[in-house]
Length: 154
Image (cartoon, rainbow, N blue to C red; front, top):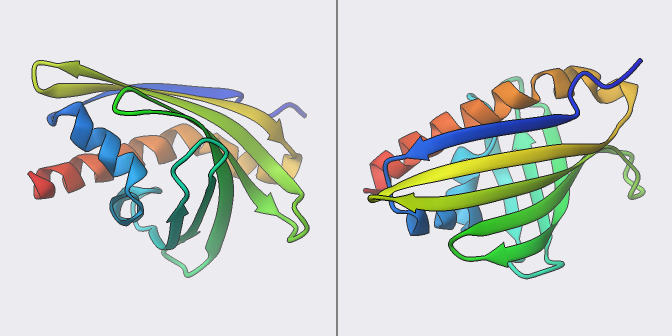
């Protein structure tokens, strides 16, 4: 069986300058407040914001299940571009069942930000297919939470 999702592309306009939107992706305290679908929290959110810097986020679902994720920044070009990889569903020995590469661009447009996400799934084992099926919706819910956070900040 083939993975249900191989890539996700989303464009979203935020009513905020791109510097602020970019900061919400690169400040671990802000990122922890919006990352993940509705109802999720991020008690662990550690970012080493430099090329080859590590990412670690432990998302906790509404039922208390913890979903650890790791990753690495590849490109950091403030406030225009981020490229980072992520890996999830690990076995504790550095082997992951789901991996992807995420490219995010931030374009300034009259005080608003046009954000474009391109997530490429690079590895997906059958045990991850249910999570993959909800990947696009999860990103959209995350961006809804980001929009709410931006509104509170401004």
